[in-house]
Structure formats: C-alpha cells, structure tokens
Image (cartoon, rainbow, N blue to C red; front, top):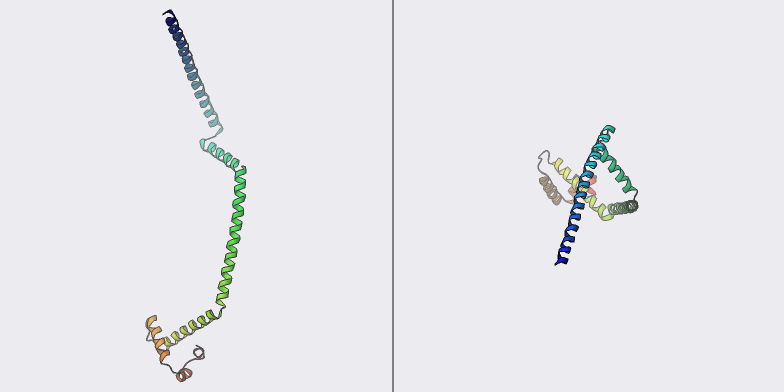
Amino acid sequence: MVSDVDLNNTLTEEREEILSELTKLEEDISTLRQVLASKEKHHSELKAKLGITPLIEFKQNFNRSWYDMQTSTAYKKTSETLSTAGQKTSAAFTTLGTAISRKFGDMRNSPSFKSFEEKVECTVSNIKQTKVGSQGRGGSFEEVLSSAAHASAQETPSNNMSESSDHERTC
C-alpha cells in the first residue's frame, strides 16, 4: 500500500509540474502575441509614413512574382516551344493557302469552266435583249428567264442570223 501511495504521489507531483509549465507557456504565448501586435502596428505606421498603400504593395508583389516566373527555366522552355509551334503552324497555313489559290487558278483556266462561263454570259445577254425587246413590259426575273427560253426555242437559224447581234451568233 505504501508503494501505491508513493506512485500516486509521484504522478500527482509530475502532473503539477506539467500544469505549471503549461501555464508558463500560455503566458509566454500571450506576451508574444501582444509584442507581435505592437510590432505589426508600428510596421503599418511606418508604411503609411512612406506612402506604401496595400495596392502599391500588391503591385510590387505581383511584379516580383511575374519576373520570377519569366526567368524560370520552365517558362523559357514553354515560350520557346510555343514560338516554334506558332511558326510551323503559320508556315503550314501559308502553304495551304498557296495550294488552294493555285487550284482555283487551275480550275478557272480549265476548258470546262471557260465553257460554263461562256454559257452563263450568253444566257445573261439573251435575257437582257429579251427584256429590252419586250419594250417595257417588265416582269419578274422568272418571267424574263421564261420568255428568253421560249424565244430561243422558237427562233429558227435563219431568223437567228438576221435578227440577232454578232454576240448572239457565238452562243
């Protein structure tokens, strides 16, 4: 029983020491918080005297971070890679545009396109002459187109030669 009492006594004394140390630490923390608050207040006052506002401080921090990022190896490598990719893409689009332009030029100079173009010109010319020949009857585009088709279906080769212009003879 005596050993139980000694053991309990030792635990109690140890507990009291721990509680005492904990109390001292809490007091130190409280004192440090007060000192820190005082220092932060003094820090703010000095910044205000120098004219350093939170916005200016934010800009300075941003500029510093931006500079640090631009000087980083990763940024430099990424920038070089994107630049090279942009140049290659630009060259590819230029080549594609040139090829398409060349193909349109070849198509426009082909015999079938020229034949189609002549037929369209002839039809437009016939429509204009039919419209003028109707002496102001007017009408919609569909009516003029219909009358031009009707007139060309009824014309005979002899009528066509005597009444038509030189341009119509080639149509």
